[in-house]
Length: 222
Image (tube, rainbow, N blue to C red; front, side, top):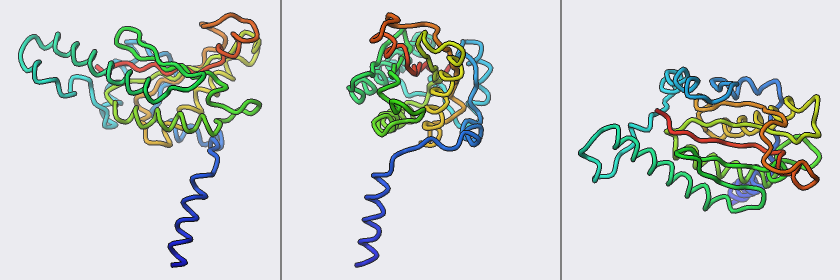
């Protein structure tokens, strides 16, 4: 009886423990296999052998609907990709209805935008409890839709001058480490810090809050 109570208490305490990113010196171990470069078509092609060697799978291995058993293979593969990414988009959208988070579609790509204050502590460079909950949800979906590459890109606002690239890369790496800790294959990952590049809002007080963000772009693995 006492043992059962202790186990229950341990579970409850573990569930209440706030997540903290591991020591920075250990990040290379967690992110082994990730690429620290932009996710271009050429970089994905170069990464494919590593991805497949780590257990990754291509979109062509996804089961096609019965209606696609016949016909042109290229057309069928394209249809499978569109259907696969649409389902991924819907699941992310349904699971991430929170302030500061949006899910968008760009062709066959799916982009998740995470405003910094929605996933990180306000005055500390670490993931917040709400952020950990959000990233845990995303991790589960990423593992389900594993025939994809993902680029994790950090951005700052225009006020962060000299340290902009370092700050944006720090955010991206923290998200990557969290995903790695929760079972997402790092061979799928491209991690970059882009500083104040590519703002998505005005550089006023409100817009700067939006420009500080992490974007996760998901692309079918071919």
